[in-house]
Image 1 (cartoon, protein in one colour):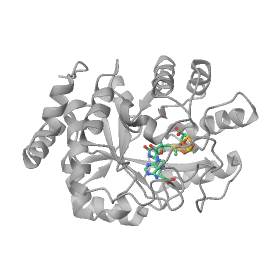
Image 2 (cartoon, protein in one colour):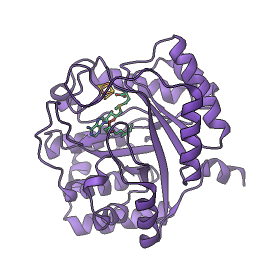
Image 3 (cartoon, protein in one colour):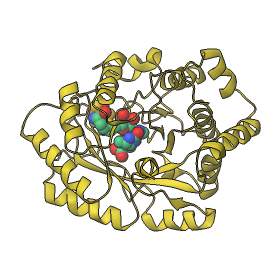
Amino acid sequence: MIRNNWTIEEVHDLYNTPLLELIYNAATVHRQYNDTAEVQVCTLLSIKTGGCSEDCAYCPQAARYNTDVNVKALMQTGEVIDYAKKARDAGSTRFCMGAAWREVRDNRDFDRVIEMVKEVNKLGMEVCCTLGMLTETQAKKLADAGLYAYNHNLDTSSEYYNEVITTRTYDDRLQTLDNVRKAGVTVCCGGIIGLGETHDDRIKMLHTLATLPEHPDSVPINALVRIKGTPLENNPKVDIWDMVRMIATARLLMPATMVRLSAGRTEMSVSEQAMCFMAGANSIFAGEKLLTTPNPSFEEDNKMFDLLGLKPRVAFKDEKELVH
Ligand code: SAM
Ligand code: DTB
Ligand code: SF4
């Protein structure tokens, strides 16, 4: 049963279940709702890099921190399409374009993004964007161009949010998610662990996600990638068991959602990633780079898929199932 009336106590109890029991329960629910052999493969591309006005303490692209990221203007549509084709040929079915913007503005850059969305859509891939805050009208324009998903993360609990980002509010984030939903675009929304938050903050974030009017269609769980020059550069490395616990709890709360094992895979062994799939993760970002940081190569991931008996999920699967 899909529920969005979870109480915070219920989420707390699930999260605190003894680890192996939690993994077993999550694996059981995963099996009931999804094809566990199937993993959605998404490729990210940073179409506009760096120079962002926001102060997100984890982010290599915030202008105010002195990181190794060089500012780059919005890419040309042709270059983006070439990259998308390569990703498709390597087995990706979802292509996500990211921009280091606080919000979308109605200007020529936005017109170009609209053009990119149309072109990627024509390649038969699920098109996703992550461009910062959006109005409902902007979301509708993207939807009309064929946008399939929009990524906009809550990142952490509402209580801890101000410790990480001060240049926008949690409510701003929720408003954008609402605008995306109203435009009929699927919602991709998750968070990061390793920001210095407590277990309670993680529980609260999962509770917020699982009690949205509709569950996000995908929930990325990122392990903080520690970036030199950002305020969080010296945070301790995320413990794999914390990642597994987050994924398993997300799976139990949102059984039919794609739970994405997102940033942080370069620091995880294949066995550790296998444990995440066992606990209910059924999506990854593939390709040498996330937005600005390294990620395992297609070859490494293909090897892992072969070893674990996983196969990439086809594009637009839910829609295809509705048709038949
Ligand atoms: N600027 C837009 C925004 O903030 O929504 C879109 C791009 S932003 C880089 C997308 C997401 O990447 C963030 O919400 C955050 O969850 C994730 N992210 C950024 N830097 C990260 C890091 N160092 N480690 C893990 N996740 C990170
Ligand atoms: C998400 O939750 N994780 C991705 C995607 N959505 C946009 C981004 C991770 C970024 C990691 C740091 C970087 O590569 O710049
Ligand atoms: Fe800008 Fe997004 Fe990075 Fe925040 S996470 S600094 S909004 S690019």
